[in-house]
Length: 263
Image (cartoon, rainbow, N blue to C red):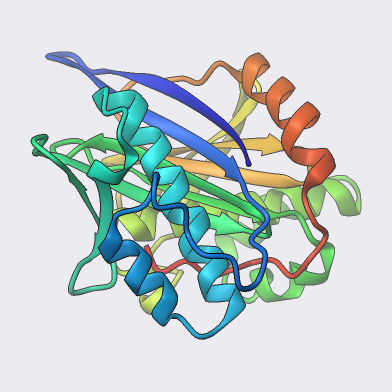
């Protein structure tokens, strides 16, 4: 397993809070049990009840990334004290022994899991997807007329695929904050502006002006984090890119992607 965790400073006019983002690479081998030094017995039991390899892999990636982020942010060295339950809408619900009022958003694609742990009073959402031109038509079908017009200026197939993946991940990250997933029309999640600034894409929304999203290109992937628009926050992009390109990217398997996380 390889991992990267970074604390984020969430700066607002009246307060400064902390969050943490985590990326985990783990190649699950079919039939392997969970490490009981990392996972609670209840998590191990649930894992064993899962029938399909993909569901087991996604469970492992999501929980590992959530545990890593929470461990660093909340100074909890025993990962068994960090667990993720499932809410009534399928959303992840973070539980850390003795620590209330924090929540988590998780995502996974191929053999990479990612999570952001944040104060409950400051909602955030995360999504990661592979850039894949074969999915362009699928994403195009979910864009509004205005979004199609803005993206039509892209130069070349690669840039077009990158921007489409940015649009997809931005909408999915916001849907996790709203706890709708993609059960709602993606037109409701319309983006009204996407700009490339400071090594990442920043997007805002037509119908949810209180939120904004920041999207990062990580090798063949796009990772987006959505958060309240009036919060200033940033990641150490040079460190993140170096880690991803030297550790994550070379060992990522080229397998099926665009897993549609519910939350």
